[in-house]
Length: 359
Image 1: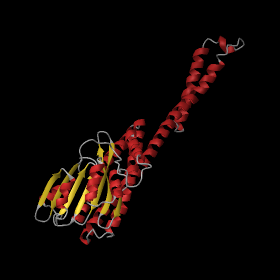
Image 2 (image 1 turned 45 degrees about the vertical axis):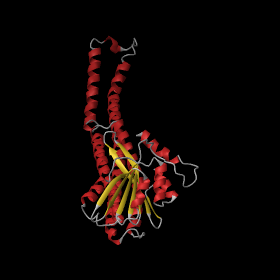
Image 3 (image 1 turned 180 degrees about the vertical axis):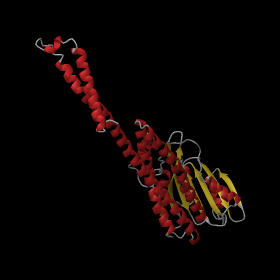
Image 4 (image 1 turned 90 degrees about the vertical axis):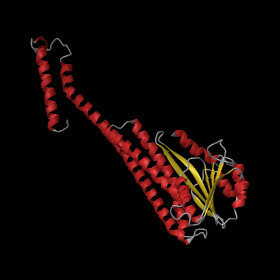
């Protein structure tokens, strides 16, 4: 987890000192070829193909059909630049696509909208949260999505287009952009369900037998919640701006769907806040349980010491061995002193029990 957090912090400073618009990839280093999928559709037909060269897209740009260009891998800045130039994207937009440390945001450039999202995946085996930046460019009849890895949360959207399920084939590019945003937000619920199960497990350990591993897991989950909140909270502003109809590229018919995904985002944020409060409470419970356990141990040790104090006093007196002590010549002095010490010890234990100092 420490290595993961270090990566998140390091990559933010990689471009320090470079001029605006410098196209340098900032993020996880990858070597595989950037893949570009092109999907064209309308209410009657659909065409899907793997694009080998950006120049192949030019032939489809003036068509009336909705065009979805899906770019998988953003580590090749030359490919991103060529694609951005083909669609007239601003250099700062291309820079933000390559810089994976962006916060969720929406920028309206008039003839297209640029949206940045954060997608997450939870690896249950490693108990780690994996972040991925998703960039979406919405034009009048096209959507370009950029993602870092092959793992694709947009498969359900593609399947709906292929089989013509729902309204997606009858709507425009703005509805497709909504579907992509909705797919990312739906993934948040899956991630939070996994984190919720982890919290329940840690809570069980906390109640039964808390250890140093328990406090480590609590701190780890708290860091994840802070990171999730930081990455998802700005999305509310993005969806709020889209829902208000600040851009003409989103049709009025898409408004109710944007309000729906906005409500989902609010639910996600509420869940994150609830989990954060639960983890803070669990941390307090852990500290209290450790303190109570220490108090119980100290109580037992104190009572034992208190019981042995008069016994030690008696043993100390009769261990001085002065010749003038008359008790030294008693025939039953030794067993008598033991009996007296036993009576004193038992009497003190009974007294403690009556005072309910001993459970």
